[in-house]
Amino acid sequence: MNELFSKKTQLPPLVIIAGPTATGKTSASVSLAARLHGSVISADSMQVYRGMDIGSAKVTEEEKGGIPHYLIDVADPSEGWNVVRFQQEAEKAARHILDEGRLPFLVGGTGFYIQALLYGIDFTEMNADTDYRSSLEEEAQALGSQALYSRLQEIDPEAAEAIHPNNVKRIIRALEFAQKSGGQLISEHNRREHMRTPAYNAVFFVFNMNREKLYERIDARVDHMMQAGLVEEVSRLRAQGLTAQDVSMQGIGYRQILKALDGEYPMEEAVRLIKRDSRHFAKRQLTWFRREAGVTWINLDEYPDQEELLNFMEKTIRTKLQL
Image (cartoon, rainbow, N blue to C red; front, top):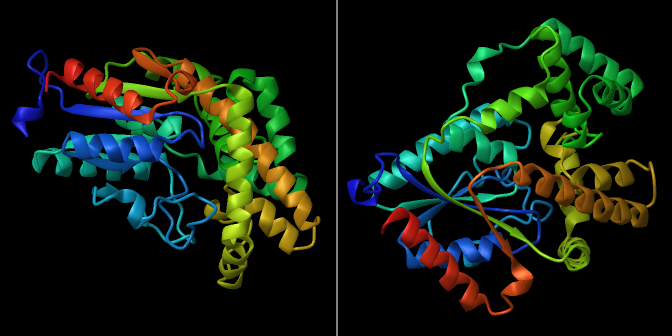
């Protein structure tokens, strides 16, 4: 493990490959991990769930290329999964990878998860207000998520910009934070966390590309998911008793198909909404990562040759980590 520590710092090394959905993070991470004796920790909030493969675009055994992967298929869809649990499991995974003398790669598009591991955020400082949370959950069920989202827009518009209107869990957390902290905004809290000293000596890449091209790739991915059996996957989960109240079923792709199966709208409309919401999610992902300092942005349009991209990333990692 000591060989992987930088000569300039005793912080453990970490390579982060982030960016919006459908930008090729998985392929790049596997190739680089093979070159640099690495293992991958998934920073994806959906790939943790067993049996939710198609809608999460879960990395397959073939795509893993023999590279060890962590935080894939570690929870049942009926379980709650959150950033606190992710942080705990990701820290254990990173320590295990380093103990094996390998280089940890944190890969995914969930910015809050990446931030939690990179900065070692302390989530014990704000205990849950269960009564207030319960009242918000009841309100969401009675009036819909938009009612809570509108309130968040008034209280903390910056936080609302980074949260999807249907993400009841995160909306409630933001409102709960403001209530329990006496009016402190979660956006201000997050900004302070971004200024914390990193817990790792990290090389942080963020992928981006031409917006129109990105949206085309997202649409194509959704079409592929439908052809691969997304409806059947959601039907199976539904038959197992999962509902829209389960955190796992609130993910993009799952909630839209579930509503179509429940007769709220035609399946064609579900596909349209998945594509739209995926594009909006990609935009919010980019907004989140633009707040990060010390990031190496990679415009994939400048690297039509995958080998050239990988060579650049490998050289950057070796230089920054002094490997």
